[in-house]
Length: 121
Image (cartoon, rainbow, N blue to C red; front, top):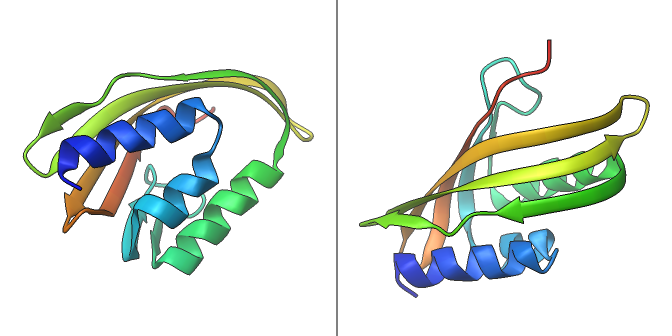
């Protein structure tokens, strides 16, 4: 798959609520994932560690109220999109999250992801 095809598939799966399928289908085994400085799991490498990071995050969610993902913007082997989520977190209450997601694609797989968002006070 080229970068546009990977980007389109990621958006399609996320819109279907199949976020974990994105990891198994589109991510390289040596994926690097970067969160905002100071956040939990700020830098994680390898498909097993990134999968665990995602599973741990989903385990903190008590209820999903809605989500949306933009169409991807592609430039050579990178693409970005925005994601918005409305979730109730266990012990933390309901929050709206909005982030910019940037992905790098090499040989038809996502090799790096980085998320930009405001950290809660």
